[in-house]
Image 1 (cartoon, helix red, strand yellow):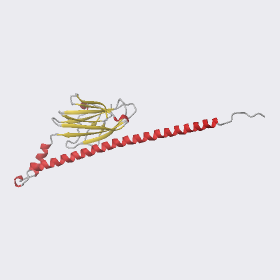
Image 2 (cartoon, helix red, strand yellow):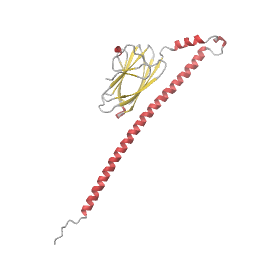
Image 3 (tube, one colour):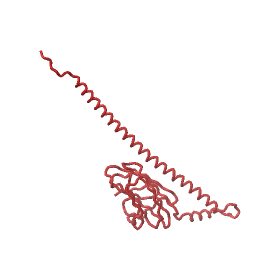
Image 4 (cartoon, helix red, strand yellow):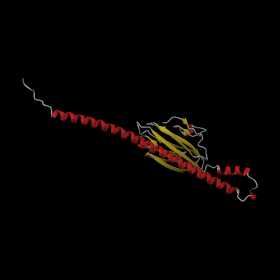
Length: 229
């Protein structure tokens, strides 16, 4: 099981403990997408917990960036402990669930590997977290005399939400592109090291074979008869 640690952004807990033993644990900022990259040692399993409200949307996307086989086991469970997603030896995946109230658990399992550690990237996208109505009320406190304006408050909020959604989507795409780039770079570096290793092996074999051939050809032309005096 994994060790307990705190991530750099507000407060998603990395732990192998059940949610009941983690009172007061909060999740990512409600209105922001969040991503994290970590190293999972061989033979280890790490679990994360994310509190969610009722009828929200939780999207989890993960990729294995580095490590032998580029594969991992993934498990997503509901607050009641019911298995929602279980995947074995996958290199990436995207899953979206409509949530209930409680702490959702998702785990990355590398216990099937005895040697290779894995570098894993994952991103959480939280939607319909129940703060939009409160944000609209906050706007109304600071805007007065809307009847005198050609554009209504609702139009302003719709435009702002549209821009916010597009910016969030752009950031999401850029994050995925960086993850794909990191994985492709790791694959290329691994292939480069492998090509260099086998090139050296072939070079050594060629040198040894050449030396043996020269020795055998030389031995064929040696005069082995002994002269008598």
